[in-house]
Length: 90
Image 1 (cartoon, one colour):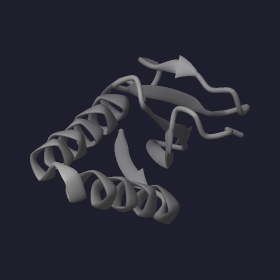
Image 2 (cartoon, helix red, strand yellow):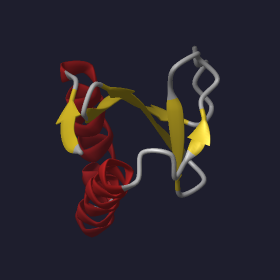
Image 3 (cartoon, one colour):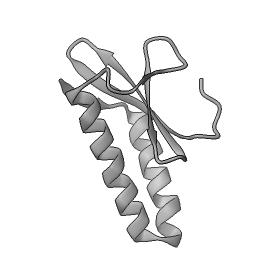
Image 4 (cartoon, one colour):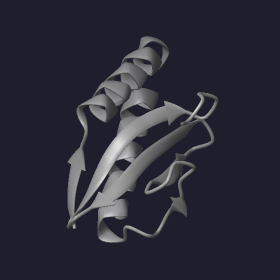
């Protein structure tokens, strides 16, 4: 399946990277690579990750602190948001 990122998910990703890079640039790069890897895996197997709290979504736990929310639309996986695990969702 094709992989797409919504604009808000890209903003979330950049905000997280900027925040972590202030203290540890290497950790920010590593986490960003993990986000990319998990997103690619979701496109290869869209039902790999758990059913999301919001209807029609699925959630990927990235380390213990972040959750990537995605949905399957037609023949693509769309990353909707990347949130800190403590944020309210939905």
